[in-house]
Length: 145
Ligand code: CA2
Image (cartoon, rainbow, N blue to C red; front, side):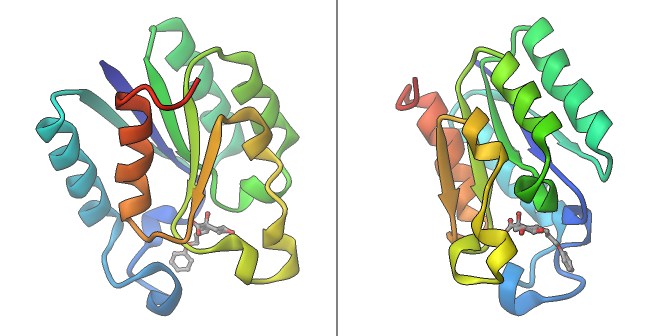
């Protein structure tokens, strides 16, 4: 099984600011955690981070064309307004889980809306980095779709 993990804008800056919201660990630590989990579960994983909307859309389309089995996506702030990422997610037929490190429902008003989750099967929020592993497990264990 082949999974793609997409992280959107500013997530490469994790651990640098706002540790009270996103934790003290950095993006590299997140990647290591995901790779270790994938190895334990015997699945292959590709990690992708971009600060650019179009690059994220290209990656979603590529995942469809190369027969990736599932996508875990944290679209960052694009979550709250990107209809283009929503359309891209909707256009690819495979299990998709949206994940947020923080609890987007207990923060600023604008974070309470997720536009992009309409293109995913499930949304996980507020579990810190562990949310990525939980999202992977949902796909691995066939609990979405
Ligand atoms: O909780 C999440 O995972 C978010 O998707 C993170 C996004 C935010 O815009 C969403 O509303 C919720 C952005 C992450 C910003 O990352 C930072 C990293 C270091 C310092 C400041 C922000």
